Amino acid sequence: MLTFSAGPSKVYDSMPQYLQDAYEAGILSANHRSAAFMNLYREVHQLFCEKLHMPEDYSLLFTSSATENWEIITQSIVESASYHIYSGSFGKKWINFAQHINPETEGLKIEADQAIDVSNLNIGEKFDVIAITQNETSNATQVPMEVLEEIRDKYPEKLIAVDTTSSMGGIALNFSLGDIWYASVQKCFGMPAGLGVLILSPRAVEQTERKGEKGRYNSLNFMLENARSFQTHYTPNVLGIYLLKRVLQDIPEIQHISSRLNDRMHQLEQCIIQTSSLRLLVPNSETRSKTVLGVTGTESLISEVKKAVEDAGMQLGSGYGPLKPTSFRIANFPAITDEEMDKLMSFLKNY
Image 1: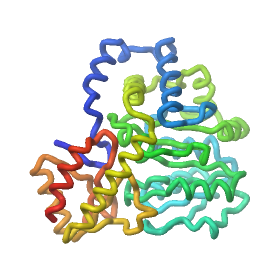
Image 2: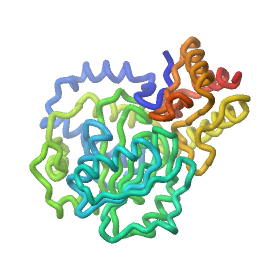
Image 3: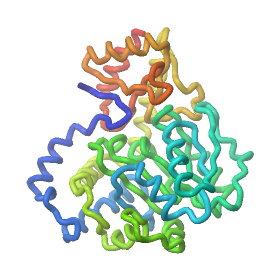
Image 4: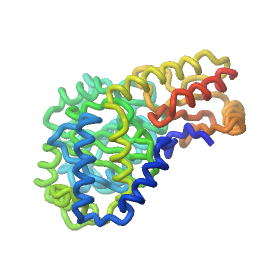
């Protein structure tokens, strides 16, 4: 079954070979204190710099998933309170987890087709971290880099934390515009689920050290202490880290991937616009994601399309939460080939 689910999504076609190579190289039994693992960690860090243009002085850490980082950020980085700007279910979950740890947490809920009005943002002095869901998987929206730049310029003294779960590895990110970035690998990295990444600027590391939170399983200071030696504080998903290295080695630099996905998303949008009954879930092109497309219609139509697609050997992602009955989502991730996307578009244009 060819899947266009928004995650876990299609893995790269080269994944079976990577897995075989990992077995033959002994990676499946590698000790996370060994020289082999430390070299692997170091290689992945360098590949993030070379392929994704992460600054050399940023720290790369491994977690179990993107969502684990919700807790880590509030627990170990936020000193007074964080302020969250969000439009969908995952942004809402992030602020809810943060409020559970720190009741002083506040936020701004915006509509899916509503661009962030930076000029009218009023984020008080007590908030030392601004949290933004750059790509909201649940409703297929995004916050463009230009808006992040406006927020950075307006609040240079605050740390900015960015959820890029469904965009890192797919679009070009300007890491200098944020201090805390995180993602999972089962989306734009084209890998099986089970590994998250957390990227920190020197300012974020400095604030973490100043706060000094320690003593928990995922205390960031403990993680950073091990990362300085290219080790982890617990036995990690070594296979996942190896697969991440292989993916990064084989993909082109991110600006080329980003250009390809932007062009392909434009074609996909036009396909939906030209149908007689399907509609784009997010009408505003400024807030519409480049890596996940939401499509809406009547409940009966959406059910019909999803069933017919499966009969044709393909799978669409369901709508999320309250959007589930009247929408579906299409992943525009790098592991999906142009030919596979063309096959889906040829099918959808009949509606």
